[in-house]
Length: 223
Image 1 (tube, one colour):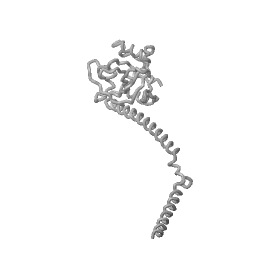
Image 2 (cartoon, one colour):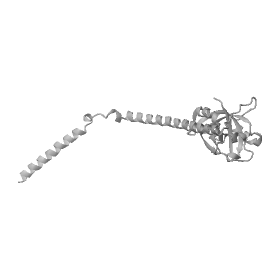
Image 3 (cartoon, one colour):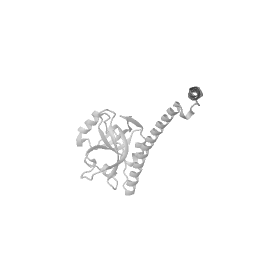
Image 4 (cartoon, one colour):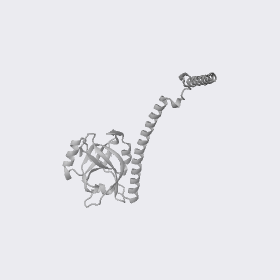
């Protein structure tokens, strides 16, 4: 009886070893089917690069679309009201340079004496949006003419120059210049994409009508 049992156990043991050899054969690298092209590492790298490119293009299209949409709405509002704003010509020989932060601070220090001056500057702006204007006594005529029926103007949040301590500034954009604004090149400053606007603008100073923000009205984009 013991011999029969040993014989039976030996048979089963042999079967297990035989099965192990078959399983080992299935794990051999040279017997695996090669991965399809779309699952290889190079394909995943290509997917990532394509996704990043699409994201950049969509972001740029979104910025352009926002600027153009707001500009078109502002234009239609002024025309409907029958009071289209006419951009004044830049007077010869009366343009003040204020391209650096120091020159911007000197402009601020001029106080009311500097209000109304035409300034040559290089500013870096976000997208155009609607900004509320408070009705006050003695409002700047240009600002009042650009306000729509709801008391808003098309304006962009900007920074004065590329310098690290550059001050924030509000640029009011007349409808007639919105297309020039939207065509200005995009640059990246501190990981934020802004439009580089070399421009002539009418300095409004610290405007009470714009919640005491330093502001100016775009008069010409120097492309």
